[in-house]
Structure formats: C-alpha cells, structure tokens
Image (tube, rainbow, N blue to C red):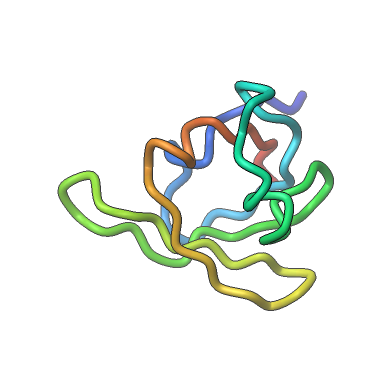
Length: 79
C-alpha cells in the first residue's frame, strides 16, 4: 500500500513519485521545472532551520531547490 506524503516530510536520500498537489493554484513554475505527476524525484539536501530543500528530478538529472512551504504542497508516494 502506498501512502501520500508531502515532499517536505521526506528524508534526505529518499525517492518518491509525485502523485498530486495539495492545492490547484500551485504556480506554473513547478510544472515548468518538472514537478508533474508521475515524475520520480530524490531528496538530495535539506537545509537546517526550515531552509530550502534540494530535489533531484531523476528523469532530467536536474537539481532544484524549493522552499519547504512549497514542498509541503506537493504530494508523492515513497518508492
């Protein structure tokens, strides 16, 4: 059974497949960066004190840093 979890809750090194978004009004920049349902991602770095999260979009081998508040809106299934 797969459970949905927001990206900010994943630990460093964990992989997941993006499932959906918490809100429908997520900025279009996330789609342009590759955060689309079905995309496999891996958490690379998590800054301390609620800083940004660095995420590897595996299909494109792209590293993207996003705010934790934004990461909390993206739901994924752990692999």
